[in-house]
Image (cartoon, rainbow, N blue to C red; front, side, top):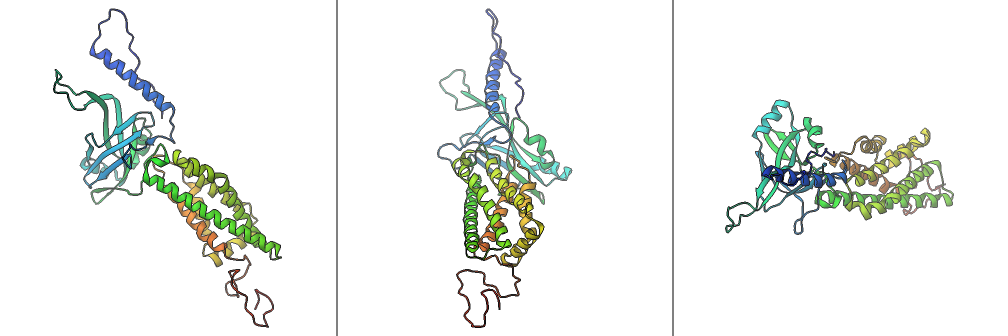
Length: 380
């Protein structure tokens, strides 16, 4: 959200009397111009936490003891382009939560967000005064920062504001506030926050594992086809694996090369493309072949059609919310886990439609029985 410019340069005229008001207006116009330039480069998908300062592991240090919220470190940029630069050398922002608890209880809310706001046009004295300077004064000013506990009912208005950034998810239970350990605050880039970086690496690793299994499935399908063991079920499973390989191959290099330097939306986009590709492939499969494939998954891989389709649909149904992207990234992780379990088992099977009460050898490397009365490898 890019706000309108509200402070303009002072018109200086020869002979005019210069007062404090003129200097403050000139200073505010400069701050507003810089903020506007920063905001022009931002959108609703790339604001938030910035890289930590050298020597620090994280750009955010937020804690809650149940009764008070404390923000010790925060390095971020708001959607409107205003900088937040709060480090350990400055006084921490503290918010007693008694008033917020009463307000949330009155509204019937139990979930909300810790939100930090900045006012660049309300300068606060800062720094160590020089004892030799007369009159004694603070040498610098910094923007005014404020910490708030915003209930979820006020989420849209608070988090889309130009001078606000959510930094934590709060839960109120039995009159005590707690911070969610799973919450991922908005980040300018994936690599700025260790927890976000871990999500990125985890999804990338899972995608690599999936494509390895999918490649093994395609090799097995084609090998069986050349040896005369091709069937409709194997062909359908091969199509699914090929769709998986194409989607991951088209996106994995960009994900690995640029992912940590891009907005988290790139991670979400990769996961959603993956889910969309699987969904469209399954929808384009004739009903009879799809039913046979799903029955095979259920009987021999332990993955039911509902479980598989729900995992895909959960990813597609969730909207990307930059202020709270953890639910979507978690859904992508669950889909990856389901596909890994499915493909890991499929990479060991031979894709023959048999019921489980029939004799079935599920691994190619298992030696065939030797009785003379056995008329075929799969028969009795």
